[in-house]
Image (cartoon, rainbow, N blue to C red; front, side, top):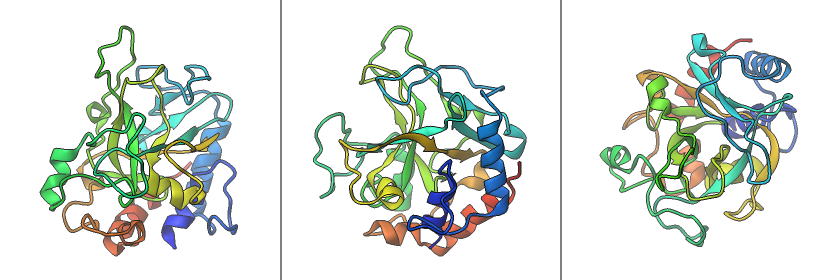
Length: 249
């Protein structure tokens, strides 16, 4: 299954032929290996961010490979990002709705054109990307990745997901590395909950620039009733494969 393969692909260890996934494309493997070995991001977008509240603000939105039409998260010393669990959007039976869960995602208006009121974190594999300051906290780093060509609801290679939400300013620090509970469970199993994510900074999130990365109304199973139905959509995976196929070290 493609989603399992690419979930493995975005782990730093490249877990080929394991319970998590199958062998990843050589071009994607080579790119991730080179990014990990390349040290700190050389062409970082503005802002320093945290992978966890107990860490340091050493994670960046990196455009070292913007010539390939991608932006990704990168930490120091070969680190990438972790995967916290997001439950924002429509209510569902998996998430409790407590904590910092928001009743809507950042692109509720855009996704409504596809016949649904909002994304459902238990069905739609989405990534949290970009940082806002809704609480108007002083010196809070903000980054609008749309200014750099990333389009709302565009495909992101975490196996494949869409850019569906942004990081808020409702915690102690400006964090990065978060995905819907559906995507998190595809990657790391049902032990992932809104209170228990994947803490290792070994997950890469690749965002693709341009309108061509957006699945559109017929390019994804927006009205899916399960996460497998959303992830296994043929058109969705074909576009993801096309985008990933152009990457190189």
